[in-house]
Length: 523
Image (cartoon, rainbow, N blue to C red; front, side, top):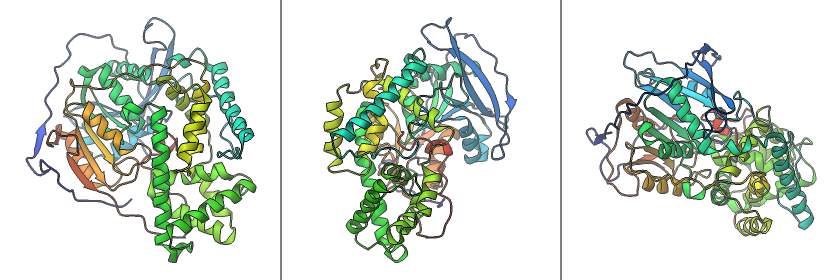
């Protein structure tokens, strides 16, 4: 990763002494029942200090004496004498496993800060090692799928039938569980974890969808929040149909940024110096793959899957550009197949992750039940943003047929919290910038740190020294940029430089954390 330093100052200069201390929330004093957690060593080669435990929680939190399910937890235990308490971390999704994220956060924060926290990861209900784990219609995302862009009504009906079959399969397998898989239930789980840890309050650090989970938790349990960091912020007013429509436009813009980068490096990739010509060649590749999938597995839909991670993280651009160039110039399929294998091909966790993704999003909020609405909106956006609009539409289409009714999302507006720290890149496609601005307004006293010009999803703990200093100071002392009380940024950090072009073979660049890339169409 590129090392980044420096800070652009906004109103309320971010200099020594220009931070305000977070006021302490009233300490909850009522005694609570506590479940004792039994921690056992479960270290990995990368994170040898990891410990694991399991926690039984109600399937239905409104019926605490009823059926129970199991959450899988992880921990990197504090080593300093001064103990801040538990820092719960979530990588997003929904549907991503979060147990390894505890190791990543503890290893990447400054050692003196991490040493004072028990960093707690968890697999949300239905995910990974939590039980029961959801799986619906195995093989639904396996290659080669039908082309995502329908050429006629018959092809659109075929994809609609696939989405309906997925929803039906989920209902058949998990109808008893589905009413209880959603963000509100997960927020209640967070508080069950807090109680089991014996903590009166928690610190929270969520990426992407994890920002929405954190905001919902804070709304339900404001007195239990000590500090909270929300990185790459979901728009709470777009949950979830509107958020996906906004993603369609933003993914297309970010894909165009990639193609313009390829054009700037014509000397390396040989695809032309005009971005429009490079874009035309990309769509020509897509059309050819529809007719003859590369390696028998990368068709048109899989090509979109392969290049979509490049809209999340520009560290992938050199590998993607080399694969694009090899195919477009000489018909060499191997680099493209290899890029699909490392960035997009379903693996052992994909079916579970996608099942939970749909279960959470379809349950959280209302989706159009008339396919005519989806059809109209998809074609209208596709006309201007064709890169992944239909692909994303089919990814979410089971919600049109979901077998349990949707809830009304909670209002996350909150004036009862200590200052919450928000991070956002201005060109982020997965969670567009407007979501952070909206959340900043809704969380009174929050502070917004912006990576201006940045397009990668997830700002902190990936090499931006400016953002990481602000994060570390907040977790260390509770101090935040003072800001000016307005809706704009309270501090601005520079974006990283563009990646360097290369045609050298190699694996795709790692994500900020594997779980953050587990659901390329997630949040």
